Image 1 (cartoon, rainbow, N blue to C red):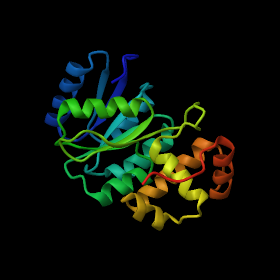
Image 2: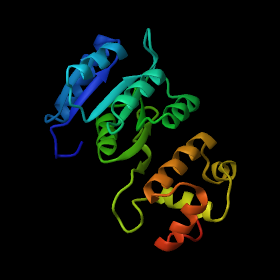
Image 3: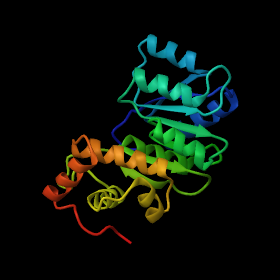
Image 4: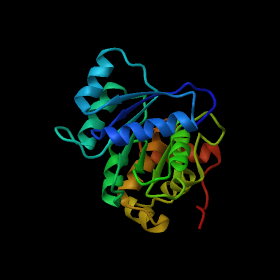
Amino acid sequence: MSEAGPHRILVVDDHPIYRDGLTAALRRLAPACEVRHAGSVPEALAALDEGADLDLILLDLVMPGCDGLTGLGILRARLPLVPVVIISMDARDADIDRALHNGASGFIAKTADHTVLVEALRQVLNGEVVTVRGTSAPQAPVVAPGGRGDGGLTPRQRDIVHMLADGASNKEMAKRLGISPATVRVHVSDVLRALGVANRTQAAVAAERLGLAGKARS
């Protein structure tokens, strides 16, 4: 995690052993962080009602009463500026796509090494979107909008811009990049927001203005 802390993190998971283990790892690897627990989405909402000030939420995908994707929507509505990362025993493509499409800032498998997990959370706190499918390093980070001269875009997002300028469909982009159409939709949405435009045509115009149009990486 970044050194700017302390970071205030809420872990929402119905398994106390996992919560405690994750909390211990976070405090060992990132001593400046402050960790709170909730065993369910209603408990998380109660913590917000009590005035919990958060920088990051880790949300289990499968919980009784309210599943993680439903909870994701509720928490994003309550705290639209706080990143929510889904944590799960399974890291299936369909689950990852749904989580990212519904506003998650990341998806991390519970089998991930704690050092890898903390690095992924550091990237999320720096404005990126990451996935960790197992013990491997975080994959395909996507930087959120910034103030750089390139519109705050990562190389992957610049690829998306190039293909938008070429008139490529989401399906064509997915095939060329080797990702799912749902993930492409997430990237396109991020690009539009980063460029401050409302549609694909305006994105292409903005890309020309910023000098981003051209051939995508092969």
